[in-house]
Length: 203
Image: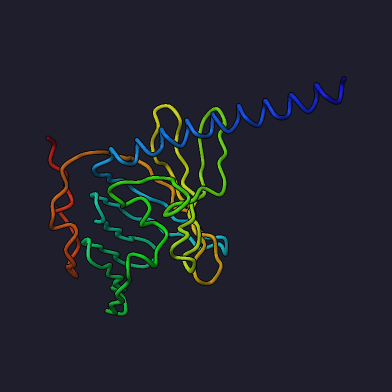
């Protein structure tokens, strides 16, 4: 009898957890699908001890700008068609395909965790935050991305990826502003700093 009760409790708990996970994933889907734009400061930390910081701008779908201000002046700009990685110090430009970077998940217009295009391999939630690890089965060469959200209110606060050198890179956001109108000029490659063009216009 005790064994039966224990098995029943395990099954009930597993079913309850699966249902709770489904609810959490649905909330995250809704949050990301309703997010129009985001701007924030960021701090980047790598598992090899490297650190960097800068400004992040996202306009959905598919537009991104990351201005690294320290320690190296780097610029990443995606206009929806392709991504440019610009090393200001070397004056060197590299083109990157969207499908080759895990963070494309954040930029997608419509997100669905359906195990076909996006597969959740891990979900963890505590009283303060929720984290999910996402794989893209159709692009097996792209490594997973872990997204971390504040729970109340639900808001993206951090993501983690593994780079080509197998170094874990963590991007932490601060001073986050969502759904402001961002100038299209932010997402056009220009060797000059964004300057006043980075200012958001309130709706």
